[in-house]
Image 1 (cartoon, rainbow over the protein chains, first blue to last red):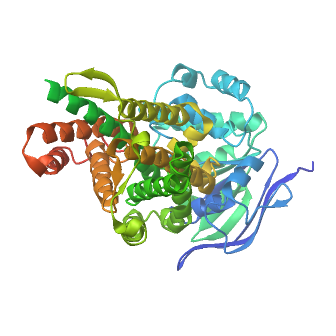
Image 2: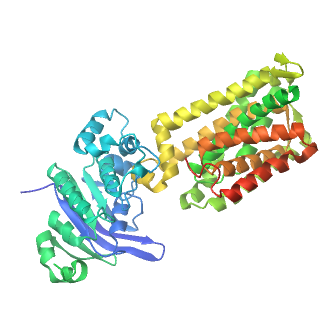
Image 3: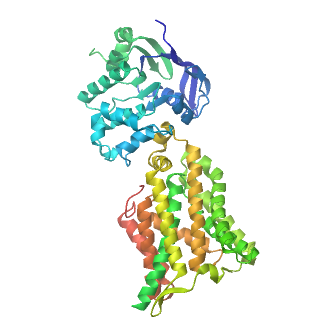
Length: 239
Length: 291
């Protein structure tokens, strides 16, 4: 089976002033995959997703999305071309209604979005119930769903999620990973950055392990899960 | 009672202009991400532009009004690239200092280069002094009505833009979280330029309304207004656009009443004293920061 390459990153370097956040990252994402980025805090996962989206500029290297070099593109163009980021901490707009948050997800699209909204409301009835409510009054789990739904509103070809399980109760984490798997089954390609390595590897197809701005290990999720080094460093002895 | 009514009318007219100024100020603060101290100076410079065009054209009111509105818009837009690098880094305090520099340059231009620094007066036809409604010594003039109606229409137009349009949604998103706005694909620079344009346009309208209700302007007016606008914005809660409206009316009324019933020049001390007390009790302002 030959799958289309969605995202290809070649030797990407990113720095914040003197701090080198990414030191030559290369990775690939194929259509229909869930690719998992694991690694400790500060290993460079967030820097990677933010530089893919054009929020943090790349120092060198190339980011190719669906055959197009987007390394130097502005964020608004990258979002419009089909990448969305569900950021760490959810990034919802607390003083705007649930509906307005969803509308902002499709901000780059100037046409009618009522059909997209209907689909979202059907998939996530909790958002329909709260459509007029201020997003800041939602619970943590609901905010995470809103953040994902807002990402879907942009009609993404690649969804990037940064630490979506952070701060959620265990029962909600389970629900969240079910949503991610279902989205993937519905055809969405997902790049998932997670500290919850075990859960993430269980739902993902392939994974990359980050350490201080480098990829130290990569492969199929099952293999990575078994890998002793990963177990030791990121999963803990409980596995 | 008549003194009270007369002062009340003046106070409402003045308060509604303050309200318009505070809207523009807060828009630049929230969406532009800067502390726009020079905003009022730009408005006063636009009054001067209106005055110059009136002089040249032999008091052609339409051209004069257009000149005020256009120069408000243009002057505001000119400052955008100056502030852009600071806004990008979130350097609000630095932007305050740059804005003060701009305000001093504008004040210098007005006090040295225009009309020899002498107070300028606007023609009576612009001021609309003819009384439309009279009760005793109190009158409502055409100027009062135009000022109040003008600010209400501009205010409603602005709130429609802010709460009912796609662009307004982008404005509010940038105010609440520049990071989230960015990753949602809102074009930050374009949206910010648009905010300067709208703020400048509202400032241009304010300049005409000020010319109508004050009847004159001088180089120090910029500083006077800037202090008031800044104080009202603080009083309401920085960036709280709805709260700013209420606070502007309160300041207008407080000033008007203090002028009427208290001796001499104490009105400023009283209105600013009030603001100080509020800030001590509620450091985030009466209505809390950000709307």
